[in-house]
Image 1 (cartoon, helix red, strand yellow):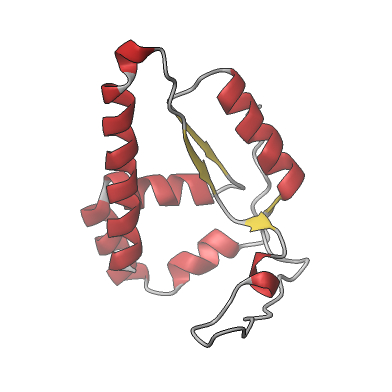
Image 2 (cartoon, rainbow, N blue to C red; image 1 turned 30 degrees about the vertical axis):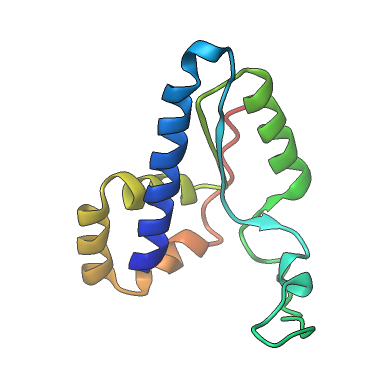
Length: 132
C-alpha cells in the first residue's frame, strides 16, 4: 500500500511542477485522477509471462463509475482547463485525497481500521455523488 501512495504522490508532484513550468507558455496541464471505472482492463492486461493475459473480470455489483461517465468528466475538466480533476463514486475521492495529501493520517486510519477501510470504499450503501 505504501508503494501506491508513494507513486501517486510522485506523479502529483511531477504534474504540479509541469503546470508551474508551462504556466507562461500558454500550455494547460490538467491532472486527471479517475477512481475505479468499469472497463475490460483486467481481461486485457498481461501477467509477467510473455503472451499470457490476466483475464480478470469486474463484477456488476462493484462500485465503479461507467467508462462513459469517466470520459465525460475528463472532457469537462479539459474543456474548462482545470488544474486537477478527481472523479469517482463516493467515498473513493475523500479516501484517496487523504491518502495522497495526508499520508500519515491515512496510515494511522489504516492501522486502526485495517481491511475495514476497504469495505467502506466498496460499500454498496453509499450512493454516487454527481458534481457535474
